[in-house]
Image (tube, rainbow over all chains, first blue to last red):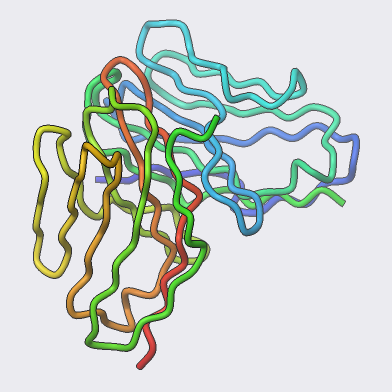
Length: 115
Length: 111
């Protein structure tokens, strides 16, 4: 079956513009995560959708960042008024069950460059 | 507050020798620990995990050791191969919580 997909694969934008990143998780996966990886750094947790529970937004770096997920399907991460420090690879992952240990499957990421 | 730490950003090992990647954590409540491997321009892929009630898990060339008293885990790759060259992330998981990742260690296996 299909894995986690993300679009676009690359995005170049000008400072101050808004961007929207999309994640298509594996069908039936309850949990969905967004991470950010800046150049030379590790995976930084952003937000976690856990089924019908309220999302864990504790990793969002500022109110310019927001994310939505409709049911157990697609998620979009929106960054408003982008800044150069937002340049990073944005990774999405999904897992079958929220709140329990089970394997996370990652998408290939969206490389965002803010000029 | 970095709960999972990988203090070595990079490691070089000769082909055929052992690679040892280390990870330290601060929260004794974690239930599972995992290692992920990441190639450039790809998402991380799961490699091996260990439950907090175990001290060793082996899968082929990969073995993970957990020392709960020291809050330390390590990944051993024997023998190392050039295809193992990648960034390795340590991660920890607690039920009803989320995954916490370390900053990664870049492994280079020299032919």
